[in-house]
Length: 65
Length: 296
Image 1 (cartoon, rainbow over the protein chains, first blue to last red):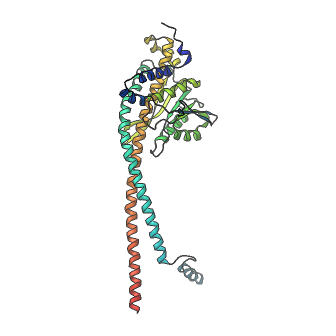
Image 2: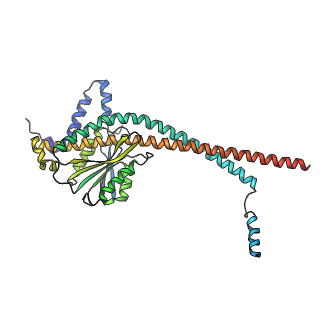
Image 3: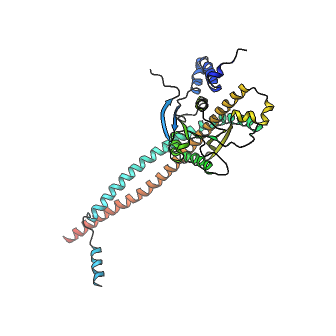
C-alpha cells in the first residue's frame, strides 16, 4: 500500500469532499444536476478575538464570471 | 369653596388650540382608514410567508429524517466507548441561522448555552470556547459571553443544509487548533410540528476515544481513529444542522400563522370602529342640517 501522506495535508473530511466531488462530476448528465446541489456550500466564517470579530472569509470564494 | 368653582369652570372650557369637535372625528376616521390599509397589507405578507414556510417545512422534515441517521450512527460508537470522566473544557457549537421572524428559535439556543455556563454542577470551564453558526445567535452571544467566542459561521440555512456545509465547518474547527476535551453541540430538537426544545449533543474527541476502555474492543489504528473523530464531528454537525433547520421552518410557520390571526382580529376591530365613526359623522351632519332647516 502506498504510504498514505494525504493525512499530513488535509483532514479526512476534506478527503471525502474531494472524492465526492470527483464522483459527482463523473455522473450521467441527469443525475449530475441533482447531485451537484448536494455539494453546494456558501459558507463564510469569521475569527473572533477578545469579543471583536475579524474579517469575514469565504470558504469557497465565489468565481468571478 | 370659591377655588373649587373656579377649577370647575377651567376644566369645562376646551383646551387652547384644539380643533372643533367635528373636525377631530374626521381626522380620526382618516387615521383609522390608514391603519386599516396597512394592517391589511401586513396580513397579506404574513399569510404568504406562512405558505412559503409550510412548503419548506415539508421538504425540511424529509431531509431531517434522512439526516438524523448520521447522528444516530455516531452515538452508537460513543455509547459503546463512554468517556471515563466528564470533560472540563468543552467546545460549544451553537446552531442557529441568519434569518429572523421565526419565533424563539435563536434565543432558545442562546439561553441553553448561557444556562450551561452558569450551571455550577456541570463544572464547565468559564473560558470554554464557543463557536456560533448563524448571525442571530452570534449577535446575542457576543453581548452575553463575548470573551468565549472563537469563530462564527454564516450563510448556512438559506436552503436545506448540505453535508458539504457540515464538513466545511468541521474542517475549520479542527484546523483552528482550539484546545478542548469534549464537544457539545447546542441545537433545537424537533419535538413536533408545533413545538421544539433546545438540546445538547455530545461528541468525543480523538484523545478521549483512545483512552476510553470500551474503545479497545474496536482494535483501530491511530490514523483511522483520527479520521473517525473528524468524521463523527462532521456527522454530528450535519444531523444537528438539518434538525435545527426543520425546527426553524416550523417555528416560522407558527409565528406567521399567529401574526396573520392577530392581523385578522385587528382588521375586524378596526373595521367596526371605522363604520361606527363613519355613521356617527353622517348622523351629526344630518342633525346639523335638520336643525338648520327647522330654524328657517
